[in-house]
Length: 57
Image (cartoon, rainbow, N blue to C red):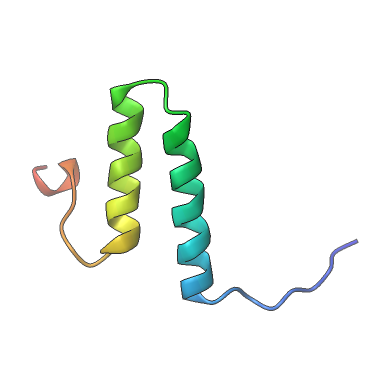
């Protein structure tokens, strides 16, 4: 029952991920969740730049 779809472009995937992050922000229950979503957003927008806790480890 598999339907073949062409692979999504990097830009399409990035746009979908950013939209999903924005939806999650609207329902974030606490500051920790918002911080994690902010980190996900930063990685999506600037993947080549240093981000978050992994840089201090």
